[in-house]
Length: 83
Ligand SMILES: [Zn+2]
Image (cartoon, rainbow, N blue to C red; front, side, top):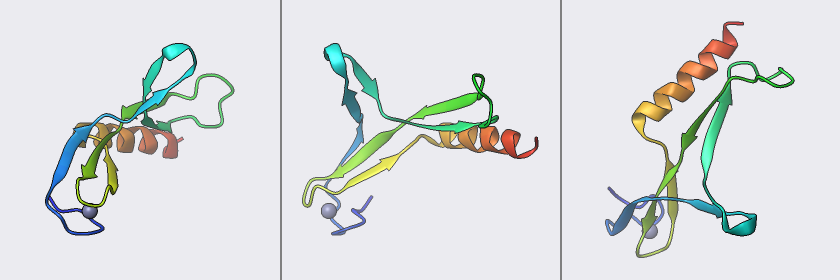
C-alpha cells in the first residue's frame, strides 16, 4: 500500500477513528445510508464503522470501510432507490 499524497509505503493500517463525546464516551466514526431517507422516524439506516490508514511520512489519513460493509451500504442504498 502506498500513500496517495507522497507515495510512501510506511503506513499504519486499521486505525480506529474515534469521536470523544461528552462524558468521556467514545464513538467510532461511521458512514450511514438510509433505505427510507424521507421517513420521520424509521429511516432504515445501515451504519458502517470507518477505519483509517495513516501515512507515517506525511500524516495523510485515508479513510475506508471493510469490503463486506461497503457492500451492505450499497445494498441499503439500492433498497431505497427501488421505492
Ligand atoms: Zn504520505
